[in-house]
Image 1 (tube, rainbow over the protein chains, first blue to last red):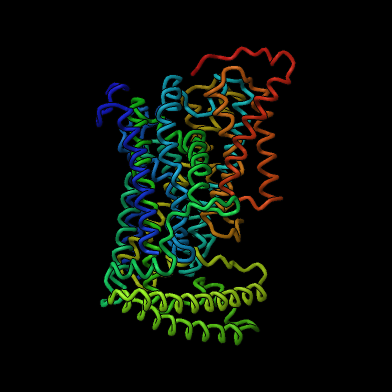
Image 2: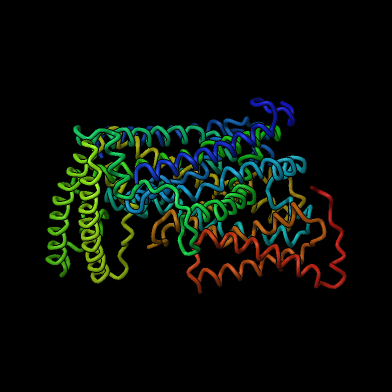
Length: 38
Length: 570
């Protein structure tokens, strides 16, 4: 496997973005969870 | 524990040790012993990274934190995914290109031998003590609740780890991590399933979650900015980022996990996978604690979960006073259960006013019961000033032992032992590697053969194992244990991170300025920890920022700007 081509996702940038977007989504879900069940 | 539980526990631990010995056979050179021949693929690396971080304290103390304080602790992990991305971009390519065995080796390439040695020694101190805690913490909780001998429990956990880590090196550690992580996740999922099923049948899962929320146990996100509060969104994002950058980028126990990757891509994917799943996994573990909390709204919890302290006060001159408090606690429970039922009824009827009124009643009884518990703690302390009053750590395992069926108790115990062994093994593995590569090979005996270095690595694994067990024997009364481990790291992480940031992102700062800057950063952290009420997550930020700024200033003040030749490594 070449370092420039990750085995999943089109590029490393896409994978980095996926991790960060996942974090933002998690924070949003946790915040909604906190608010809804308060 | 029943015979079935012993069978499950014994078989699991026996399997792990045997599997580690088998996977780690035939180690003849450092590449093989320290970095598993640099042949591992990303799924193994990812699980190994996760198992290294997931100590038994995580599984014992975290649900207890949710029970006592809600889910705010999840915010501690918010900086972690960002750190995984940053390390994938900046650290992984450099470490791979230089083909280093340890993170500290890189510092000599960039600065000089003294910076490498200083950082390696800081790591050895911090990780040596932490590894002792990772053995001690679960051993203490298990020995208290099961009546086992604490010293013997420490000795058994430590010895099992030493056997396969010393023999098989990193291959044994990484491969057993995979099995251990699967057992841990299986154990926790089973515990959650049974906790939810143990809630009275007339209370649905959604109602249980709503009860937890109404009683302040689902407070996952808090956007308030308060430097004295440990877990807020901001301390988690900024302080947690610093902790994660330092832990995953500069702590050999983690760096060694992804240095085993066959290519930089394998290492990166291992880190990124951790960035994806770590936050939801911690949320899940905290959620187990929240469900245990709901369970105890319908089944009376003990006034104090630590059975050893309860037994001591029961035969002391305060026994009658304590019995009175237990009566008050039982009365509080009966009244609270009634109000929780009213709350559920009001929620079912969509009666917001009724739910709010019931919630207020529940909170009033909760406050009264908190006062009763405080009085009990005061009594326990009066009876024995050295008593362990940090009850949070005992909540989850106490629930497991009392309410989970035979076989499942053994599975959860196996998960706890696996978690303890996985982080301890990674710690010993890294301590040995750093001692051999950065101290023995670099400073004491640079011309030995590969076989000699492997032999010395094995000897040092045993040495650090014995050191960790000895420290575990003496560690007592540390408050909430998971905080103790993270706090210990936070004394050092900021300064170590400052050194690595200067290494990665500056080209003009030399080794002397970097070392002095790190010392100034460390002194500042000690000042803030001892003389202010600044929450410990912020110590990481302070140590790092002060360390970097001090090094930059010192570099300008040094005669001839050190005139050092700085290698181009970035």
